Each structure stands twice: as C-alpha cells, then as structure tokens.
Image (cartoon, rainbow, N blue to C red; front, side, top):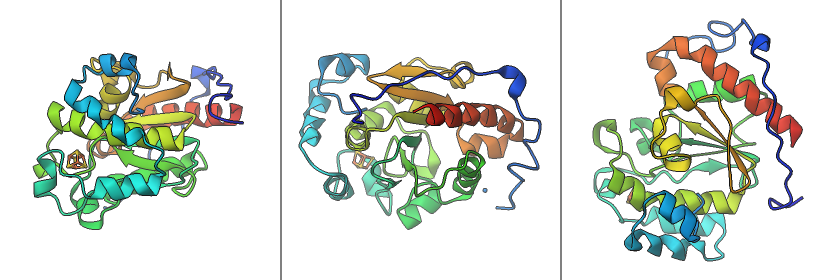
Length: 243
Ligand code: SF4
C-alpha cells in the first residue's frame, strides 16, 4: 500500500484504560536520561517567504542519503557556525512513525546523532513501552544544528531548516508523526499551538496523523508528565495497530 492509498483511522481512546503502572515501573528513573511542500497552501500556513520557498529544490528526487549529504554541508543559518556536527536524523527510512524533537543538545552535537543524551535514553524507554525500537522508527529534530547553550531555535533558524524536515517527511512518508514538544508541534501542526492544550489529540494533515506530546527533556524536569506521555503513546500504539 502506498502512502496515498493509506487508510488512516483515528483511534478511539478510552480514558478509563489508562494504565496505572507508569512512573517508576514502566519508565524507571534513570540516573543519567513537512513535508517541504511546494504547494502554496503549506507555505502560506507556515508564513514562509519567497526566500525560503527556494528550499523547494530539496524536492528533487533525492533519496534520504543524498538529502543527508546535502544537509551535512548546510550553512543556511548561523547555527552551523557554533556546532560540531549537523545532526540530520536516523532510523528506518521506511518507518511508519517518525519522532520529531526540537534540536540537538550537547551529546547529540558531539556524536552527530539525535536523542543520545539523557532525554534520548528516556525516549528509548518510551519507544520500548509501545514495543518499538529505534530501528523501526525515524528520529530527527526541527533544526539539525545545536543552538548555543541549548536555547530555543529562533524563528529564522526554524524557517531556514524546515525544508530539510519537510523533505525527510516526504522521503519517509510516515503514517504517524509524534511531535516531541512545543517547537515540533508549532512547526508541523500549528504555529499558535500550545503543547499543554494540544498534546494527546490527533491532528490529520496531508494524510499524516500527528500526535503532539511532551518532549522527553520535559519529563526529566517534571516526572509527573510521564503519565500523560504514556497515555499519548498508547494512542500511537493503537493507531499503528490500525494501519
Ligand atoms: S540548522 Fe539547519 S539550516 Fe541551519 S545550518 Fe544547520 S542544517 Fe542548515
């Protein structure tokens, strides 16, 4: 079945089915833890300028590796000057589900891989909780270069880097994208999104189901959010089972 033929069914979530064995058991505390749419509708949605729309060149029939090679030499925004590695993303190029975070942190910048620090270890547990491994999913970030001192990427940087994320989505063509945190949710679903309001609710766009949830780093700061993320992940598991 091709992506265009995919039949998506929004899963019905039963609030009474929330498992009680979340924190301390499922995710024990760790010691350490858009498609570049050329179509005008998406460009308008994101408020992109003519300059950014030149990212449309990324829509060439490149495979993911060719896109990666191009990204690794990118200097489109100022973030590249201060980082060690461009962290393109990794995982199954035919993944049914993608996880999109904010940007690389210190450990990711050192290793050139996404989600390898404490938050990445927690993400591994989150994946495991719905019987997924890194090999089965694709993991990336909105921006591919580490913002200095892990600050939030600014709008210009997001606009500059979004064509890579968009092109990754086009290549991978996932059924589901899990937006990890506010920036991914704003970038991929709604620029005015509030993660606390939108998390746990499905959004459908261009044949892809989007599930916003908290970033694993937020769970490290506030473990009480783990239960909410577990609820969100159960919905993802259910939706995967319905594909
Ligand atoms: S953050 Fe993105 S746009 Fe900026 S230099 Fe890195 S790869 Fe290029």
